[in-house]
Amino acid sequence: MATVSNLFQYPCKSLSLTTPQTSQFPSRSSAVPLGSRTTTNSIFFSSSRLVKKRPLKVRPLFLVRAVDEGEEGEEEEDGSAVAVVDEQEEPTLVVTETYTLKKQLVDSFYGTSLGLNATSETRAEIVELITQLEAKNPTPAPTEALTLLHGKWILAYTSFVGLFPLLSRGTLPLVKVEEISQTIDSENLTVENSVLFAGPLATTSISTNAKFEIRSPKRVQIKFEEGVIGTPQLTDSIVIPESVEFLGQKIDLAPFRGLITSLQDTASSVAKTISNQPPLKFSFSSRNAESWLLTTYLDDDLRISRGDGGSVFVLIKEGSSLLTP
Image (cartoon, rainbow, N blue to C red; front, side, top):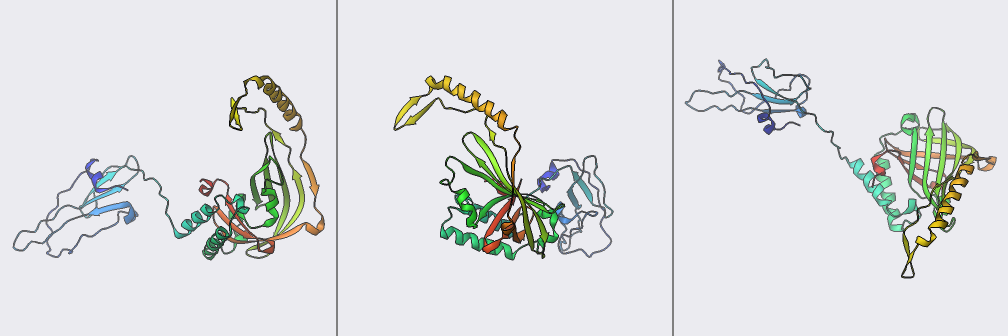
């Protein structure tokens, strides 16, 4: 937005005015928008005083507004002079109550390991924030807004206890869950749930492919078709530090460089062999092949859904600023 000080930093032309043949003047400055521009993109300032027993003087009205490159100063029909400023305004983020609630909700997930380590107090806070957001849901019929549902969603929090064994380090030693995501294809009405695991030497994923049917403005019925165990992606090299500390003693790893190099060559060879293998697919039994999902909040970057047993899932759209700490 151009400011008053900008008026003295850019050339402008002024027009001398004659005194109108009327003695009626507004008691305060008036602002008239320029063309189709709104008053938020222009700064108007004028001054006119009626002094008793003295000749009436009128000062020129100056308008300052931002325009595209190449446009020159111009003269308004009312005789005012226009100073044209070439300025590109940076977009600003409008902080709304809903945005503030979303930030508070995401911040409350910190240290909970997607919900596994959340305390009862933190869970109560999360439930309260979710309830407030659901009351402000900008998309009352999510299943009729498939373009918003389309894309990859990253799980940020859940109360679904069925996922907690995967999130626990005790279940898979030396392996951690790197990411849990859900990818929705709104054109083909398919959904893929994926869990990415990371270990010391490799990463792999387990995913399920399903079809979904729209049952209500908020609810979809999901029918799982197959599961896929991805091909492990092994690291080509093992990064070893120069030294390590063990029981308070600093141990130099230089004598082990030859062994480390041998391990790196072996890992690289195994990685090339396994990466050529196709992923392993398996089917689901008909008894456990269906589920339902109710979406209670949906916008461009946040989705809140509820599943069987009242479990809640909070997901963030891939690429959203909410994923940035």
